[in-house]
Length: 238
Image (cartoon, rainbow, N blue to C red; front, side, top):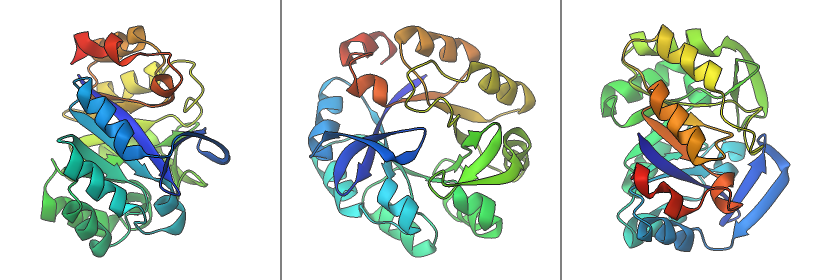
């Protein structure tokens, strides 16, 4: 299972939100590039970057930081937040990302998202299926749709999507453990989805559970920044 630390960016700074609430923001570093370099120095290979300014603005904002992380590390970056147009994708890939995550666009403009999957391939385009009470949330989690998360994922699997990041928003930033039951049902109800768990991961034991479940990756955010999981603890998973 891939271990994927998260860097969320607001105003060029590395932050974490609680349950996606922009008013509950904690700044952990003024320099996301230095944070990324520390991850790489610890043996980490992958990085999940979210442009929270972009998610709110509905277009990519913090691509300069992406460029710097890509230039100063060899981390394999997946990136999301505000990707709404072909131009946004062009900027993201030109900035050095390996994969992009589309969430709101997959809900609001499925034809565009499907075109991206066809053009770039299923290894480069990740479906963002973030949910609150198992309903898909969009626009930086500021809006909730009527779509049930598992049928949403299954529908896109039939359209060729392979990678899915699923965050249970109620778990995000709460340090209370991941949404194991939801992930178990997603993996049971799909055939070939590579599921990346996100939200609530607090311990190495959580990672062991997710790996045993069959998750392809696990995104860790607040637990790393709060010292609940140390980078050294992850060595056995790298």
